[in-house]
Image (cartoon, rainbow, N blue to C red):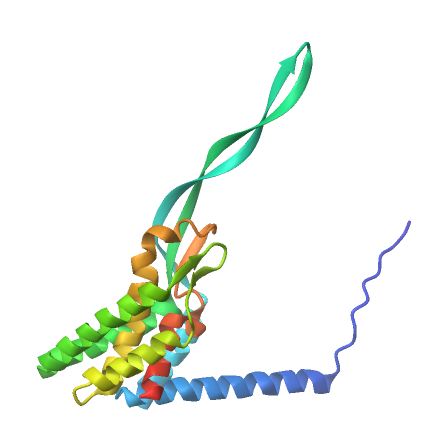
Length: 234
């Protein structure tokens, strides 16, 4: 009896150590960037660090919020008998596809919670002019995001990576009214969430996946990064 043997190339300890150090360096740099953005928003350091850790862990959690049904054409075969001989004949049919739409905790809910915190803080402080500017900036950012977002089958909602942060940064400068960081973060985060995802809700079910997650890339998703990068650029 033939035995198959799988040869696993040896991995040296120094190589594993280098990989670990690279991963650690990337984690420290990325966490420092996110922490710096949160602190510019006025979030206390301990709260900012807790939000970052929660966002990382929440990147692995998707909460189903809806289910959509779509129909797509398929080619099926049926047998046709002619003089006792069976012939396969292709024909077009429609297949039902159910798509679960979920929301990612780290990539969408954590940024959304920060936005809600900032909005309620403006309401508590009575800064209604700044709240109006923030809402206006969000509408403008959402329209820009929707104009450039493209649903790509098998991939998701695609758009230029640095466009939302640049738009949010510009809106923060123009409509900041003394707090450009807040306007940049809210418009960057909500602009992508509303413009790219919510406004393309009807097209999400046609992406060809059994489940689509809003903010599914976690801390590397456009919803999370757009606000963070925008704040750092202001």
